[in-house]
Length: 309
Image (cartoon, rainbow, N blue to C red; front, side):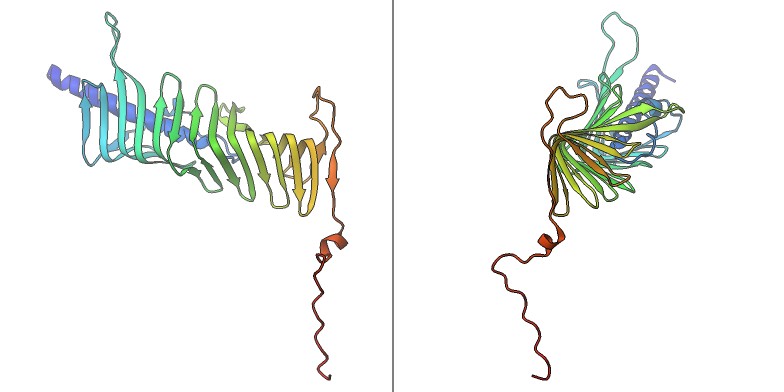
């Protein structure tokens, strides 16, 4: 093999590895779903996979030495094992070793742009642009109609869907909305935090909600300034100006626990351990007679006349 052919083969291998990294990173973002299932694999695990990578692009693959990029254009597809990345364009940015240093070219940024869709067993994520910054170990998906879908869950966001590999967290920003079965949580920002289980796999343990937090269940509605959802316990806590509504009954306080497993909610005048003086908890409970009472000025319906009159 000539030196030129060898160099070309190395560059093709570099592009294949780069696009596989992108596929891995995008798939990692799927962990944001609020299900209780274990996180399948981190991007780092996927990078070590021995699965072959298949790359297809209708307009071909381009190597730009001046811009130091590799680009697959035209309904580009990168797939390895059960992970598939689809986009109009897939691009890898690389840098050469510093002058006087030995080593190979290094990928530092991966992009998927235009009708991006990532499919994996954990679900599908949709957006207009996906970026994986290798130095920061962060994946960010942006664009219109951002959403993640799987069998039981849907997550949407206005600004971005993110996965921070090093920090083991996933973030939905801007009018974030997560739905699981008959339960919903809304907030300005939702952050899912992961920890290793006994088998060394990552599991979602806690979801932090900040800004205009709202929780919906089949029987009640709760809102507050901030909240935390503990996945294993199916327990949510709310702080700030908290309000819980059950039918026409309403409770107001500064701290609440909403147990989604038992359907029991409790309200307090201050969070446990808080230095703030507890405020009075208020409840407005309407008796059934009040609920059934007709509004003032409304006449009861006329009785039907006897057939014999």
